[in-house]
Amino acid sequence: MFVQDNQWVTAGTPLFAIDDADYQANHAIAQAAVAVADAALANNASRLTLQTVNIEQAKAAIASAQANDKQQRADFARYQKLIAKASISQTQFDAQQTRTIDAKAKLDSARLALQAQQKTYDAMQSERAQLTAQRQQAQSKLTLSDIALKRTTVYAPVDGYVAHRQVQAGKFVQPGMGLITLVPSHIWLEANFKETQLTNMAPGQAVEVTLDMYPDTPITGTVESVTHATGAQFSLLPPQNATGNFVKVVQRVPVKITLQLPADLRGKVYPGLSANVTVDTAAPQA
Image (cartoon, rainbow, N blue to C red; front, side):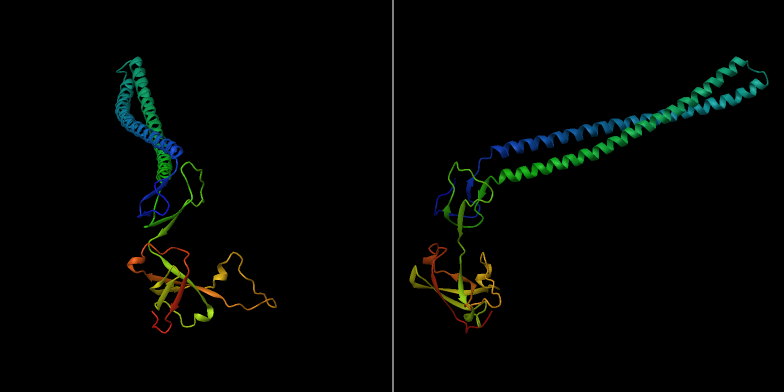
């Protein structure tokens, strides 16, 4: 706990912090997951680079095999003419034929090798897309973990007074619990007027307020807005005025009034005080 009851705080002042041990552990796990994802991507990038070299080598092997195949086919065509003229022996012709067949086989093998290397490269690219998605997921979890960790310390959203501290050090809390009530420095008044008093009331009209706490100090104000429903409509069980079961009761409508507090009353007007309110309904409307 960083504040006490009735203490004045400014916006951004830390109010309290919850035990962040679990959040720190989750944050460390999320950081490790991102590091693992980064390492996997780096490894994939290295293998892609190596695979690119393998593909270039396979292309070079094809070029060499194509040149050799072309040469051997040309030699074989020449040997066919020579054997027809009996200028070479059958053994020489058979040897050249074998070399030609071998060159064609090596070219086919080189082409298959390139296809295999290209498929491996494509598989690595698909793997990279998956690793990138996993890295993004890990980063999102780290971001959420970071947000949760930062929220273990609660800060005052506005300037005001700590009016009611409902939590003490060591207390177990859960989402939805009210822990601290903060009364903002900017206050207003909500007056419940009878519906019969609203005929000529409108935003912008001047108001005079007298608080029971300060009966000798009148406060000026201005009508800011008139609620577009009676107060009863916002109750837990709104009245159901069914036909044949209705007793007419004058309804009250909440009216929001801004106050211009004198310097000596600033910080001394509290929520829930009783007040007498007079609205100058003859004044021009805003």
